[in-house]
Each structure stands twice: as structure tokens, then as C-alpha cells.
Length: 231
Image (tube, rainbow, N blue to C red; front, side):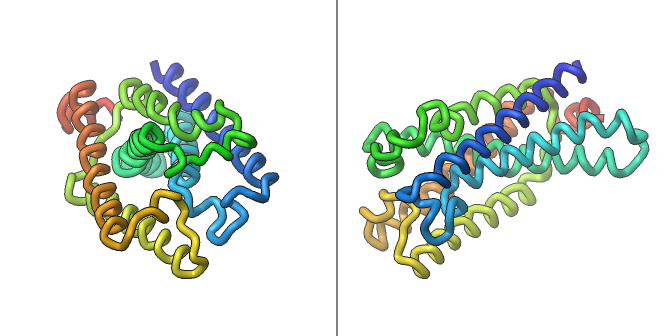
């Protein structure tokens, strides 16, 4: 089973590295893309999530391979597993699910608010789905194929909250410094609308964290049993 999980992690890592490279190549060669404006690609949560998922699966591969070269009693192996679990539970799963659900929800209502049709002329459909669709099934496969120990809810929500506030602050700074809103939907909203949009987004991402924890408990049992499986 460990070998199968390692293969899955390696394949997911290769997929994300390829998708990230393609994203940079495509947007880098198109001057009309927002990647060439203030903040670059880093003002888009989709790109940040691509980087996050790539880092996560990279840590997964390290966690899989570390026992082959380092004694299980070594603190390094334990640290990498804890880091893997922390990234998955607090950031990779809730942020990844949020990106998929929020993107396609707004897209279904009016794609021009989040992904203008002009982007289809230089971003291939497979890459669009790599950024906004396939994230979810890969996370679900990870959740059901590999056990993850969740931290205390207080600490997890604190880290997730800091991430959300940091990203919102970054979006506001980009607008303050350049007059650019990363997403067309923000241009359509007044100050009250933007505040409600950011608050709602924050409140939506919390249940996604809870969803990951609940599915993990359903698949792997309680926290104590999950910890045993990780070891």
C-alpha cells in the first residue's frame, strides 16, 4: 500500500509541476494577461493554490521516501509527516476546495466576472481544468488513500484565518498601489459589496476545513487511530 501511495504522490507532483510550468509559459507569452501587471500571477488565488498543491505533494513524496533513507526514530522523518499533515488539513484541502467551488459557482453565474471569455484564446481548456477542476478529485484521492492527523481546531483555524487575511490584504494592496483588481467581480462591487464578498468567502472556507476533517474521520477513524496509522 505504501508503494501505491508513493506512486500516487509522485504522479500528482509531476502533474502539478507540469501544470504550473505550462501556466507560467502560457501567461508569460501573452502580454494581455494580468500576469504582466502589478503583483504578477501572485495576485490570483488560483496560481497561489497551484504552488501550494505542488509544495504539498512535494512534501508527500519526501514523507514517502524519507523512511527508506532515514531511521523511523529520526526526528526528521516525523517532522516531514507532521508538516505534510499540517499543510493538507489547514491549507491544501480547504483552499483547494474553495478555489474549485468558488470559481465554477461564479463562472456558472457569469464567467466574465471571474474568467473572461478572452482567456480562452490563449489558455487551453485542459489547463483551465487543471487549475480549477482536477484539484478537487486529486485532493479527495489523497484524503482516502493516505491518513492525515489533524491539528487542534483552534490552531488550524488560526493558521487558515491568517492565510485568508493575508491574501485579502494583498489584494487590497495591489489595488491601492496600481488601481487593479485581480478579479472582474471586484470591479462591479462597491465598498459594502466588497466587504460582504470577502467576509462571505472567509465564512465559506471554514466549512471546507471541517469537511476535510469529517471525511478524514469517516475514512480513518478518530484522531488517536489516525495517529497510529500515520506511524
